[in-house]
Image (cartoon, rainbow, N blue to C red; front, side, top):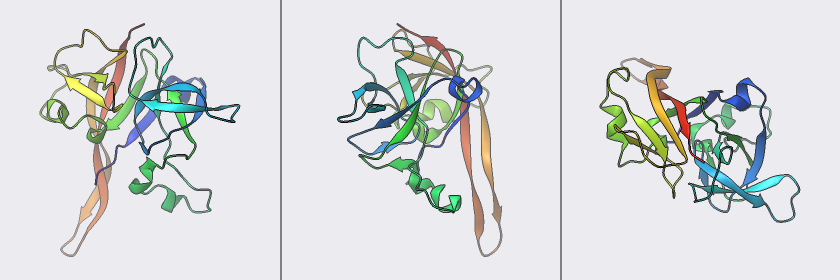
Length: 191
């Protein structure tokens, strides 16, 4: 099974020390899922309930993205960074970042709904063919389209594709892994 790879290098919370929230969910959550915070978790003073997707009434600064695999506190980060750890089990605390206009992030095709993945993967030049994204209201994955959405809380545009990682193929084995990363810039945030 493939898991979403999410890179937050050019989000405001990474570049400009904006707020990062602690959250918890009642279901398993995949890294790179978009959603919102729905009040403090029971008995907590700084951990919020995370809900995937969107709802009516959200405003600028309400949309967050999961950007933290469920890593354990051990001495070896190698085991923590396995892709099967990109699913955060229900009840496990994780971090979310606020998404704002002009933020940029990288995401693998697994972060796009399966019904619209081909919209992204068939484009070879994003400077000539515009691909827009919005957030699926129930799953929190991105929905891709070649026309700009007229509604949606957050609209992004795919800027480019690059490869993260590498592979080495020998007669006996294939070593390493590589992933296509699509860099997206948030162009509109609807209130």
